[in-house]
Image 1: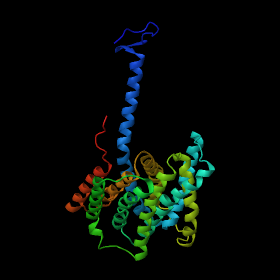
Image 2: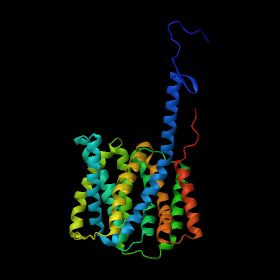
Image 3: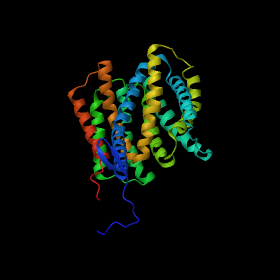
Image 4: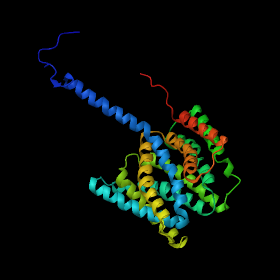
Length: 327
């Protein structure tokens, strides 16, 4: 250790009630505090996303009897575009470049129009929410299988084991629904289409839209979804809607909480992590939905369902755990 050079001034100090603190140490303290807060937010975001996404089934159950599935979505798209438009104008959010709009619109068509349209249509054709959730539970396995060749992501043996455990857990949670309310083959086809659409939407978003502004980018996605869904709302649903309290509450929840909150959280997670890791969180949606339905609609949860939930939690931990970082 050498002596301090004469041209290097001593650190300036800040006097306060707690004593003397250098400006350098004060700055480091502020940085550490901000980093800690950011770490907590990043750690909580996956759980918040799962809860918000799971409420979509509950809101759909509340509002579906009062509107056609595609008309329901059309109103939702329009409301969200207005809300986000105001936010974008107030915050002066940057708009996507013209060359990026097609890729952003395709992501919206897959994640919004394709997935939600398929789920809502399957429910309208008599498929129970539990069965629809089971089919959606296949999405992480398909995403993991495609993430390698399409995105160059490596899926380890431990992660494949976790994905298999997650699928088994999902099947346990909704097993009682498999023999009931399967609906029509068309309804099952809509649920499968929704799962495929969300899978490819997740991969497309990761590959082609990693840096879109969530405020203006989501507007582009909802406008595209509105345009594509409009003919279905007109010719399939005949613009049917009943403005009841239940429908209003469901619409508010889907527009504000799910369309803005959950979708934004998903895009942030996709931007920060691997597509296969984000997809594994969808294993948590069916059991979380079952818990919410138990609390709100008095649906039963038997011991095997609880075992399935435990398997799902363990599976997500296996897929997303990165281990201790080497220094």
